[in-house]
Length: 467
Image (tube, rainbow, N blue to C red; front, side, top):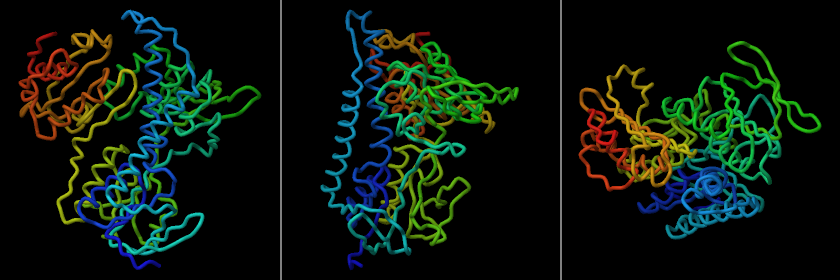
């Protein structure tokens, strides 16, 4: 046992964990970060956000070079070299993970590789291939993230039955890809492989895609993706998967009629959500409580039932988003340093990196109706935006939802090119309690896509100029 006492030890180097460690170090704390893998950054940087966006970006450039650039006078004859594309993806991962390693060194954070088990409220056992040790700590932060959900005991072999991890490393585009679940991960990965030549079909239990998303934007995206060739089998459940000589046979059931049918696939991707990863942490030995979904229960200061043990990110309640985990990491660090760390959960943006993208912040129309809140709508289509016409990206619109009495912005939903960047303005406006009038009276540069946000704000009061 070491006699070194750390002010804090973070378990997990994903976005929540590494950001928490850096902020603690900035606040003068002696910090240890424990990571079981050889690479830093967790799921997000290694098998999630970053590699998926690399493939989305590369595949979209390929698609555009085939179907869009010619009309701009750029004549190409593109070919796919999937090995090179994967090398590009890996280089992006390496650049990001090495960046985190540099930040650890810069902030004098001690990184300990190994599996962590909390053996008491102030002691952590760490084991790796070469040795094991116990460290003494004042505070512990659990930031171990999440793993993909399993489905009815069907084994994921990452060859022809995939999780999202395997879908990032296919050696060739499947001829026939079936995705179980039409949530954002499935939509994004399906977009990659459709662009690279796959026939893509979705089996979705609900009667809509992207459950929980503003349904007007989700329905708009569905229509656009169907025009591109995607197929959505909604209100269907998967019963079984069998293998024959050539492919996989899926038996599915219509939840309305109970009729069953078989469809075939070369590759199946299970994209049915994620669950908290707390295996082997030893939380059960400390009576740290979890809910029915396996999420660690915390108070408003992110404390578990053991007051010096905190939890953040995917292991607690809330959207499983990297930026949400980062904000919680900063908040916990500041709470430990006796400051007033806080996260505004009403203003956490979400982005679906399809083409076009969907980005949202705040409440949806469906949520406003459920809460019986009177609201006004302002909407502006990108087809009326000069820059969108220049870019040949005119699909979609900006929608602003404002309180009918106070005009305070309650939600913003964008479907369109670069929506993930555009939503930042809306999040900032909502963080400062802006009204739609505040946005409408803010001068926006021309010609830019952001003018569509101004026009949607004007439209809340039926004053849009360009429609």
